[in-house]
Amino acid sequence: MTDLFAPLELRKSVIAPNRIWLAPLTNTQSHPDGTLSDAELRFLAMRADGGFGMVETCAAYVSQDGKTWPGELGVHDDAMLPGLKRMAARIHEGGALLSAQLFHGGLRANAEVSQREVWSASAYDADGLHCREATEADIEGVIAAFANAARRCAEAGFDAVELHGAHGYLFSQFLSTVFNRRQDRWGGSLENRWRLLQETVRAVRRAAPSLVLAVRLSPEDARQARGLDLDESLEVARMLTREGVDILHLSLWKAAHNTLKRPDQHATPLFRQAVGTGVRIVVAGEVRTREEAEAQLARGADAVAVGRAAIANHDWPRRVQRGDALQVPPLSPTTLNAEGLSDVFVNYMRNWRGFVTDQPA
Image 1 (tube, rainbow, N blue to C red):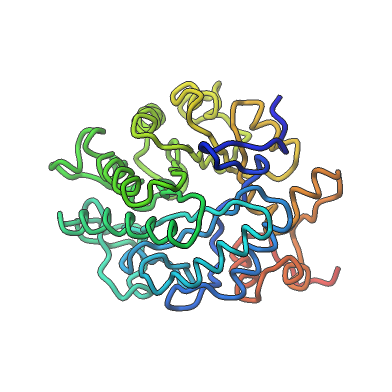
Image 2: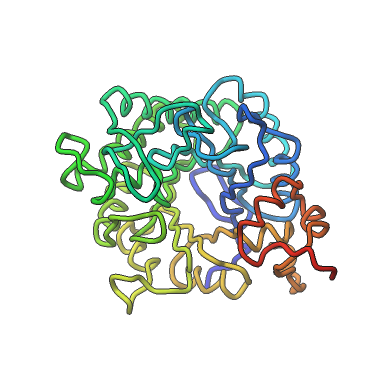
């Protein structure tokens, strides 16, 4: 079985020191204008110092109209470059590679936060969400925005970027048969529904050819991701492979579970068969222990992305390598502060049931 602590080549001369990634985690710690804060940098730097081989940023918005929550990191303007350069230098100092998760909220963008009109593949007005249908100018503009964001990351010294095509955000909305009801070249057939992601991959490659390129997908319906079919997602993975994507990041929510459509089969082997051996597969979804991480590698993943357990344990890789006990929620604000969370981040984590406790230890 692959060693969790063995190096992983992502592309020629780009080698992660191990198979453990810090999952992209919303933390609401950036400044209101999207620039990097000391608090957010401290959180990420502690994970690099703690042994994570790849550190991913939170979902970082590529254009103002895609911003979805307060305190979100921005990669939408050249004014972000000083903070991005500072981040890259500090994460590399800790021994990790650095990837930016490039993001647009689409239907799930927040007009009160962005001060912009919300748009997506098709008009939508249900479930407390409202948006208009995208124009050609919107679509061409967002492709350019992703490319420009990737160019900034390359200039800042990042190693990789990831296009966030999961969790019901913009790319997922275009792939969806629920949210995309267009009848033009951007909707209808899978070939058309995937065109936005395809064109963005190509634009990012042109703008930042030096960067490792990852795409994150939700393989089938889960939570806000709706209108996704497992077999269509497998075909998207094949098409991404033909486009030369380096990494496929599977967001499984519960990585230990098999697929909904094929209850006797797990997603990782299915996607491994679809993409072959030339594409790295990273799996996320409640990976909390060394045993759970190694189970994903045994299924064919090349790496695992750790989320909640990494919030509670900034040095998760070092702890599991030594066999030390892990801190398990609920955790006090004092403990979480010591793990690199600011009070703002701690308050955000109160939205996660059972994660923060004010009871004395």
